[in-house]
Length: 315
Ligand code: 5GP
Ligand code: MN
Image 1 (cartoon, rainbow, N blue to C red):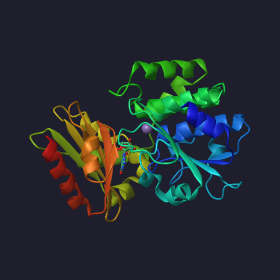
Image 2: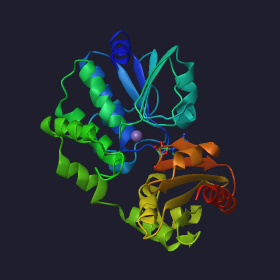
Image 3: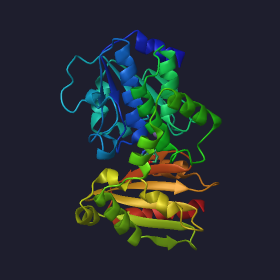
Image 4: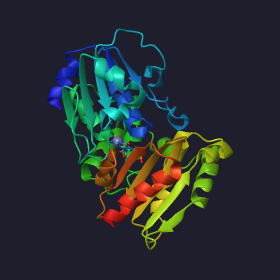
């Protein structure tokens, strides 16, 4: 962490990179680091593949998100919460073309890339280590950074509910609340409010749910047609897979999202004892032991069959 902090302090003109299908952890952590770098007099922008989902647009520092041209000559890249170069999506080439780049992440499956990387697989969210990085930069955490980081940690822990939560998670959260994080406002936006479109999509996806393998596996599809019917977008699929995992008796939950015709993104969740990161990796994806994903270039039903076969192999 010291090495990464010194690497950042010795440079300028940064571009921060979020992962595809961006969530609260990748965006919140990136914005907090960008705000801290700005406090140090550095120029920086954040690249978010596909743009910031509507429900996260309340985050402070949104003005640092570069939608088009970056208003300075970028010298260094920092990938935040991005488990592999492929997860940079449309920005992969830009990242790889930079002379100097670094990585801050917490995914077990991250093999390490970039010139400097900090990967902390036991930490629940990149937000936790982004807080440590900001401390190592010598920047006091202000209310804006605290709101970004609290959002990051809450997002990846299901609001401090999942098995990835450790004492450090609560220590980080306590620091952020002390620094002014708005717990009620953030949890309301993340967990107690959803658009009508998201609500409809949830209903359509759950209507599609099936139990297989003696009820130990639940799977559901989100088709292009469901997106159209609900008026929903890709980010509206977040958390749907959790409902499948909550079905009594289910040990592995699979959501297949038809991102476009012939491309299916899978979200995988498991209960204790089943490593879906390994399973996802065997198909070309990755993630965490209990929450992982993979994209397959196959028609939806064929893709689902492929994943179910792989799941059958580990049950
Ligand atoms: P989600 O299902 O919420 O999209 O992703 C769960 C976890 O798996 C996240 O940590 C995410 O970064 C990771 N993940 C999802 N899809 C992929 C993928 O295609 N490749 C890799 N390496 N990781 C993925
Ligand atoms: Mn994360």
